[in-house]
Image (cartoon, rainbow, N blue to C red; front, top):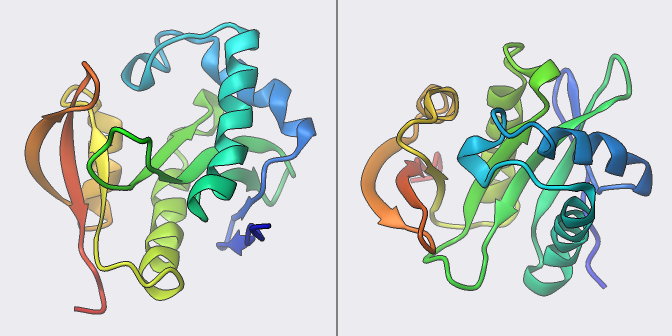
Length: 170
């Protein structure tokens, strides 16, 4: 059984998903405009399967996505962590926050914490983020944390730019 760690930043708690997170998670995925760069809107039934898949990823890979909780309110505001679907070339740091949480620097703060976890706890040598060329907000986050743009690749019919995060230990 995999133990999912809890990570903290100044304003956020990155923790395992809980059943109580589902409604807010599903709400994120009902906004097709907000989720257009990560697959688009999905109904609650598909959101449930995706939610369960994120939890199962930890068992299958030993790492995965964290629920993001805002410390001040205790609210679930999104997800961040590692994804590595079977057909992707390497694991990525992925992040999606609720529209209501955007513009507060939360994504950058959380990505920095996950980068630290990636290189100093998991001891990986490299990690990327796959970002749509039109997703300017996610590109800005990647650039703020020092990632550099590489090739455009195809992730199962969806083109994405590889942003490589620098390993601070090299």
